[in-house]
Image 1: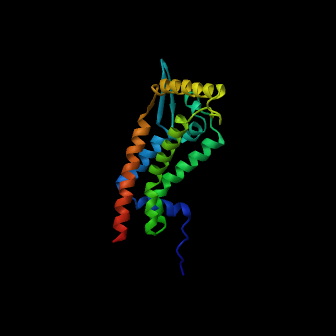
Image 2: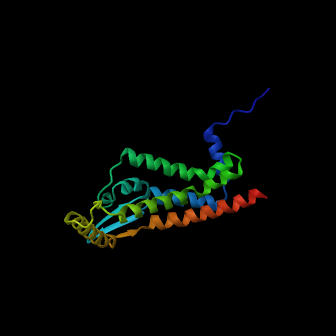
Image 3: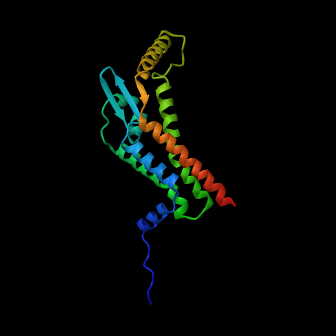
Length: 190
C-alpha cells in the first residue's frame, strides 16, 4: 500500500501559481519588481535625486519628510514589506482555497496601492499645526499664518516629487490583475 505523500504548503503554493493564467503571472512579476526594485517616487532637487520604492511607503506615510532622505530598514519597513508580499500572494488564494470569494485576492495589490496613495495624500495635505479653539486671537492668527506658510512650501516641494517608473508599472499591472480577477470571479459564478 502506497499512500500519496502529503503535500506541504510550499508545494501547494507552487501548484497554485502554476494554475494562474499568463497575464496574471506577468502582472504579479511586474508588481514585485516595481514594488521592491524600481522607484515609485522620485524626489529631485537640482542635481540631487532620491528614489523611494513602494515597500518603503509605510515610513513615508508615517513621516513624509523621510521622502527627502535615505530610508533605513526598520521594523516598520520590514512589516510593510511583508504586507506587500502577502498582497502579491493573494491572487493565489482562489487556486489554493476553492471558494468563489477568494477571487477577491486579485484586488489586494490594487487596494494596497490605493490605500497608500490616499493615506499619503491625506498626510501631506493636512494642516501641520492644530488651530486653537479661539481662532480670532493673535495665537490663532499665527497658527493660520504658519499653516499657510508650510502649505506654500509644500507646494514648492511637490513640484520636485514625481511618480517613478515603478509607480506607473505597478499601477498598470495591478489594474490588469484586478481585471483578471473580476473576469475569473464572474466565470466562477456560472
